[in-house]
Structures are given as structure tokens and as C-alpha cells.
Image (cartoon, rainbow, N blue to C red):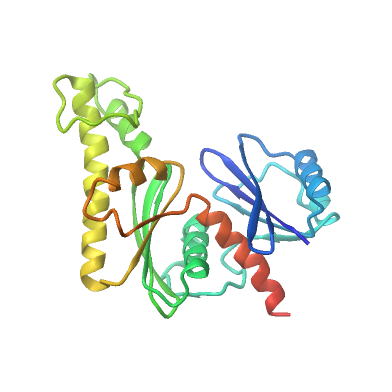
Length: 249
């Protein structure tokens, strides 16, 4: 029976249906209701549902959903197929955890760096013993633009344009774009270089809402042959968690 996977992020809700380990349905939405979820369950005849959320309020009635499917609310107590060594597991972002679980499913027994480029940009590592110790968190592209506008009196609010290719800006807007876009890319390059010094055989996986932009930038870099773009990595990780519960039975 298919699994329904829902990832409630800061910006969008991502919904997928997996048959075994194959993604057969995928969409984004801004709103999630009980009625909408039930329609998806009935349409795709799903037996299991897993929900991961970065928000406190889910937006739907869990009790009603539990009447329809085997329901899992992904949290720090959910059984997972990797070893979580994070010092403060209760504060660990569930999207970060799901991302490394997905990476471990796709590339088992390998050293991996996951770069999730979304509202924030996270850099998380998993070793070849499937042990997760943590990573780094920095502001995402739009957050950096908003911060410069918010915390200064004269800098304008500039929208992120993925087509921007200048090294330096000849006006304020372009200078801000250069600082954010190039600076973020150089940051990512730095994390990759540092990790490859320690783990030369590592896989580098890109995911998240802005991952396509980073993927295009890396195609012209020395890391082009190392970058693996998997935009659905978090969803794959959540589906892996569902299947893992059944493997344990």
C-alpha cells in the first residue's frame, strides 16, 4: 500500500505519495486541512501517513486522520534507521534529520554532506557508520536580503534573482545581490572543501527549495562532478522512516 508523506516547512507544505520506494505523486501547497488530507488518502488509497513539521500548529485534526490511516507524527522519539548522536536531539530540526535519513537510504555506508538550501541553509554530515553528529545552520538567500533591509535605514528590499551572474555590483541593488548570492555560494564551497579534506570520498547532496539554483552554480565549479541534486531528499527520508517502522515488526 502507498505511503503519504507530508513535510510542513517554513514556506511551503510538500506532499508526496510513495509506492514502496518510488515517488508517484508530488505537490506543494500553502495550506493544509483535514479535508484535504482525507481526500488525498482516499484518492491514492494510502495505508500510512507520516507528517513532519517545523511549526507547532499542524493545521489539521490528527484524531480524524488517525481514523483513516496508520499515522506517524515524526519527532525526536520516532524510531529511525540511523544513529542520532546530536547533543540536543529535542532541538534538532526534523527536516535536517529526515534529510540525512534520506541520504543514508540512497547512499548507505558512505560519508555524506547534505546541503539543504531553503529558508535557512543547513550543512549536515553523516559518516559511513550511519552516525549523525550535527552540522551548521546559516541564513538562506531571501533571509539575507530581508535582513539587510530590515536592520539598516537605507538599504532597499531586493528580491532574489537566480539569473544574477555579476561578480560585483555597480549599484546598490546589484552590490547587495552580489554579496548575498556570491557570498552564499562561496560559503557552500567552503563547507564542501573543508569536509572533503576530512572525507575525500564523501557524497555531496543538494536539496531544498533553492537547491536548483545552487546546482546550476556548481555546474561551473571544481565540484561539478561531486554534486548530487535530490530535491525530494527530505521526503525520501520520511518515507524511509515509515518503512522502517514496518521492518521492525
